[in-house]
Image 1: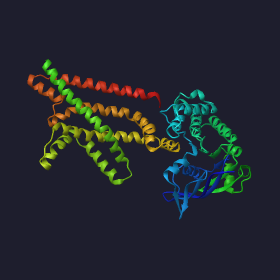
Image 2 (image 1 turned 45 degrees about the vertical axis):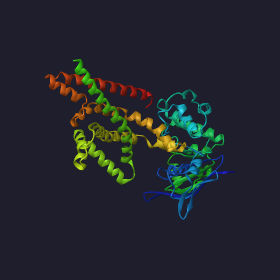
Image 3 (image 1 turned 60 degrees about the vertical axis):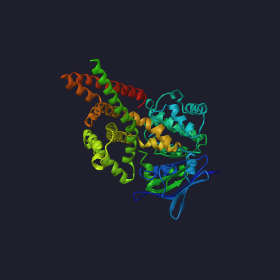
Image 4 (image 1 turned 30 degrees about the horizontal axis):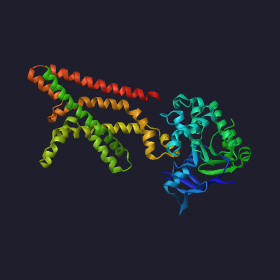
Length: 253
Length: 211
């Protein structure tokens, strides 16, 4: 199986405080990786480095065989801007706070990047957008604006927006943390469907049951390190580390 | 009476010239200033901040006098008063517009930039198609206020001898020993500002389709 993401020895500090310490993992094509851990453990920062919203201090990252940055003398050296752009387009990111464009209709939120970045023509972009909206069960919202939608609908639009660019990997940064339980279920259902279609995904989440159910591999991060990792049934059902046990137990109440 | 009205219309044309020329130059220039105010380069930030402080902290009437007379006292060179008037208005209004732009730019959630970046938009595409439309909606009310003030501020151009509407009215007033021309000028200003404010209201309405 092809390695979609290979991260080696990533480290990152913010103003002298090391938030990610020597983290490595690989994500294989067609698999789902879930990343759990307390807030401030570095999960989101790691996703943000992979999607180039933050820069790595040290480490090596390859995406679908292309190097984004590699470690040279203890420092992350990034590839050229056009290569970074190409790598960026291999990945889609779904944000906790959706970040839809409020001035654009739902349809245009999904067609804008297809047209401006992938240079698809209008008809093709709209066809793609409509089929994704249909898949998300909200094709009737195409002409509306984000503020007219519920949080769950907005998040589905943002998933459609990411999928419209045909990414190789879809990354989720706490996609349900801004949603109430009912809307959370809507989104989890969508992600589960994508998993069934063998979409390669990495999901940072606090939904333990969901993570256990859909992922092929799970990582527990604490204090900037991978404290424990393994098959989800092992990690969630029979954690070896005390802190993993404590963290997972804190969700059972 | 027709003679007076004709004179006042001429003055109005001058006022409108000041108004439009100021807008044409200071609306884009204000953006450059806002960028300078927000840059990471400390010295540029410091200089633009000082410039804005001076422009906002001293009377426009004084700035007009300074811009017109300073070259004479410094280099013994004098120049066209209308040009001086435009320069003074432009540097003053650029500072105010810059602060409005800055507040607008800073009110945009950084998630908008992040979403745009992850979707692969270039920086300029992000600015013109994602950020700017949202900034315009946010700053339109403040911008409207400032533009209305500009209409009234054009009356200050007379300080350095530009024959704009108010000066014409004042001159006429002392010629005919009556305050009527000044009140007529008031109606002129009111009509101009009524149009300006209607235009801004229409603009706000047009952008009211989203939140």
